[in-house]
Structures are given as C-alpha cells and as structure tokens.
Amino acid sequence: MPSQKLSKLAETLIGSEIVKLGADIKAKMMQGNKIYNFTIGDFDSAIFPIPKEFENEIVNAYRKFNTTYPPADGILELRNAVAEFIDKRQGLHFENNEILIAAGGRPLIYTAYRAIVDKGEKVIYAVPSWNNNHYVHFTEGEHVVIESKKENNFMPAADQIKPHLKGASLLALCSPLNPTGTTFTKEELEAICDMVIEENEQRGDDEKKLYLLYDQIYWTLTYGQTVHYNPISLRPAMKQYTIFIDGISKAFAATGVRVGWALGPADLINKMKAINSHLGAWAPMAEQKATAEYLLQTTAVDNYFTHFKSEISERLQRIYEGFQLLKKEGFPVDAIAPQAAIYLTIQIDLAGKTTKDGKQLKDQTEVTAYLLEEAKLAIVPFTAFGASAKSTWYRLSVGTCKKEEIDEMLGKLKEALQKLSG
Image (cartoon, rainbow, N blue to C red):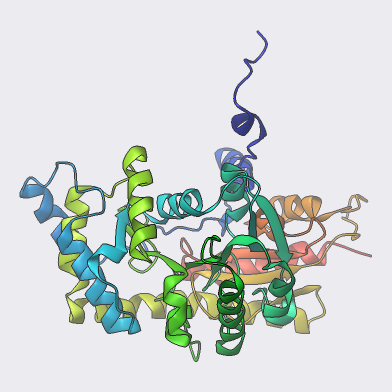
C-alpha cells in the first residue's frame, strides 16, 4: 500500500541521526557484543542518581496528592524558588512573571522559536550544535548556519556572526555547548552582546528586535578554571533581548524528571506560556512541588554539586589524557581539554586508511562504523550536529561511563588504530 501524503513539515522533517546510530548500537548489543556506548547525552541513573533529598521531595509530593494540572506558567512556589536560586548563584534578578516552567528545556526552546520567528525570517546558529536546525525547520525560518572552528574550541566567534545580524530575528547560542563541552570566553560573549545591542538600537520602534536564545542548561557543570558567563551579567542592557533556557535535567542528573524554566522579558514569556498551554507540555505538579522545595536546600545542593562534578570531571579528564597519550604515540587522534558539561570533544581522523582486509575507509561515515565494529566504541560524529560531512570530530558523552571501563575502552581503541595502514 502506498504511503499517504502528509504535511510538508512531516514529509521534510529530518530524523535524528543519533537515533539512527543508536539503532546500530542496539543491534550490536543484541548480537552479544560489549559496546562502549559514549553516545548518550543522558545519565545512567545507577551511576549518577538524582540527589537523595530531591528523590524524597518527589515521593513526598506524590504522597500529598499533588497530581492535578499545574498553572500554565508553573506553580508560584517554583517560580519564586527559581528566581532565588538564579539570583543567589548567578546574580541574575528575575520577577516571577519573567519565568516560565515547562517539561524540560525542549518545549521552552520550541515555544521561544514559535513566539519570535515568522516564516522566512533569519535564524542564526552555529554548528555543531544541538537541534537548532530542526527548530528552524519547524518555524519555516531561514537557516543562517555558521560552522565553528577548532581554534575557538568550536564556539561561534563574534566576527562570524556579525555579517548576518541585519534582518535576523533570532540568534541561538548555547554555553556550555552540546556537543562540545566548551564555553564562551568573557571577551567573545561581550563582543556578541555589543553587536546585538547595536543592531537593536538601529531598528525602529515598529521593527521586531533581534532576540538572543541562550541555552545554559549545563551552566552548573564547569570544571577547573572554567567560568560560565552569561549575557546579562556582562551587559545588563541585554535583559530585554535575552531568553535563558535552563532547568534541572543536567544539573541534577534529572533528565527524566522533566522540569525546566525559561527566563526572559515578561511579554515574551507570556506569549510562550500561551503557546505551551496549547501543547500541554507542563512539568508535572508533583515534580514542580519537589523542585521548589529542593532548590532552596543550599547545603544539600552544594554537597551534591561537589560530588557530582568531581565524578564527571574525573571521567572527562582521564579520557582526555588517554587521547593525548595516543596522539603522542603517533595515532591520528586529538581531544580538546574538558571545560564543562558531560562531553569531551575528540578527533579521530582515519578517512583514507586501509583495514587489514584491504578495505579503505572512504569517509567519516565508514570511520564511525569501523570504530563501532573494531573498537566497540560508539561516539557521535559532529555531522549529527550539523557540521560538515568531512568533519573528523566527535562528541563523547560520559553520562553512562563506568570508571573501570575507561582504560579498557582506550586499549580497544588503540588496537583498532593499530590494525590500520596508509
């Protein structure tokens, strides 16, 4: 039976490249292969459980029968708790009518796009980055894509953005960045903010302003000397143009608990609320009650961050050092020193190499398949995040990483690299 004709959106929507890779990994595992799976931008809750105090608050909230619809913008207790949490830890002040609660960051990003972007309007975003290409497609905006460079740790630079600002309605940025685990420098973010302010000052009162969508869902997970910077702290005038996307998903290894928040101008937040109310993408009432209680338990949160960040950092650092050792031994690999989030940016440049059975790895797709077959290593190529098909860089996620398997994985990778020639 021939497939039925559906909407243009449905017919043209691109499926997730990571989901496709996940299917290959699952097939290998079902065949009995042990796979070192570093593809998942999530956590193994047996390794990284949510905070115990938070778990208790969730259980208590259900026992108190908090199972009805929440308000469309989120319960007042949670919006007030978020305001206090952000004020105390980032020095950002938001009133509760400038805060919107939703079921994680995704519906907030979607409603922000829907509230700002009209068909045919320019949306500027860098690659590699997570899902901006799909959100622009949803809104039928014009893709203005900037390919970031290794020299800037794969963060977009102000001079790359500047030529495209005229006429754009949205600039989508993320720091710390998924997939790279890298962050903006203070100077680069200041330069970008100055450009946005200047562009908006040149627009008439009846013209739509250029908004900055600033996804900072990983901002609590920084390591070493890395500092997370945000637009408003650097340039207070950015408050009228900035929408923050934030939440508990990555900060507390609580991706499945589904509580996120957006911070922004009250009129924009109100429109996003209206859109989200039709989607019904609210965070559940019990989880909202629990999050409101937990966020203000300062000592418990601090203790959790200390342990959690130490465990993530150790994994990232050990794998980074392993890649640097392989590089010193002459293998065509590299890695960027870990800065933030749960990701390590690694390079495996094997295109053109020949396997022992005489097969040449013609492109990066074949390299990725070789790594899965020979090293049992599953990682996500930057092409899945919009980068060039020739990119030799990958995202390696440690959210499900067992420390005792790190050396084993590096050893398997070395064996696979040694089998190649050319």
